Image (tube, rainbow, N blue to C red; front, side, top):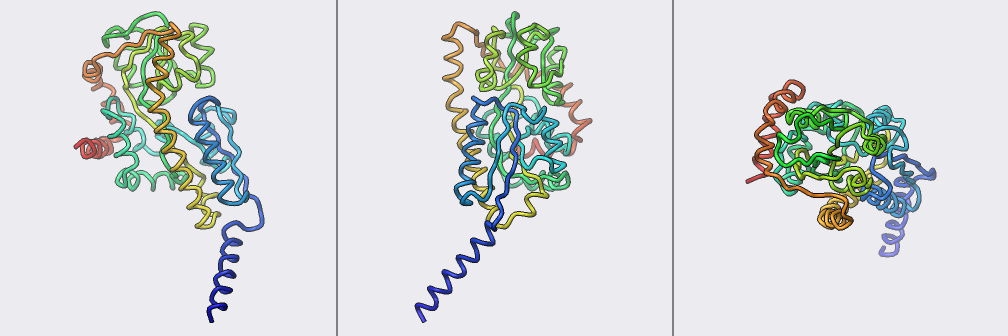
Length: 331
């Protein structure tokens, strides 16, 4: 009887393997906008390698960094249509498909990383937003990192909010960042991310706004002489997969992909946050930039026009609920 049970378990195990992995190799494309030397690309490789190993080579993930498959909105659109299996959009890009995601980037909504993590990784936020993603044809896997956005300028030092007035600032084509900059009196230029370095070097704009890791990895300090640590918007890279693709996977394959996405995202958050102060020190040591730490309260006090604009797009009820989640996480 004992031998029979062992044999039965072995047979069941063999069957489960064939169900989980099948005979065909599944190849998936993962497109994202981070530079090849950015932690986002390292996390993507970590994710792809782990999935390959855990599925014994039956799921292969080919990574396309640095906008190789198109601009961030284009890549997300291809993901929605199923032409690309996975992508890493920001909440601002997802806001095209769900108004709720625009709330994430409300100016100065998060006081720190801990509060942002509690909200965005929490069950209430995901229960609120996941149905919208699925309607768009996407499945949420996990939050990775992008960071708090800060203002950089090429010639004018920005300390007080009024110092930014009249500057031409590049932002992504996303309402939250545009509204924040325009509330400061800036003129916004929506230049594609893959054209950002050229635009800054040629003086097409006076500055831009991005997390420190982006400023560092793209060497924006070569043209930007001042970094004002406003931290005006926070957002993550959101790892999503096509629902059409997801639904074709076995339960075990889904678990592997989700677990490894979460693992890569957690590593990226820890790494980027730990590196930020060193990156700032290195840029200062190169005698490339001056870093200013302003009174953020003075900037936040000017954001009512931005909130009003976003309410007209996001819906006041959505903003109210999101801020309730932030308030709960802040206690």
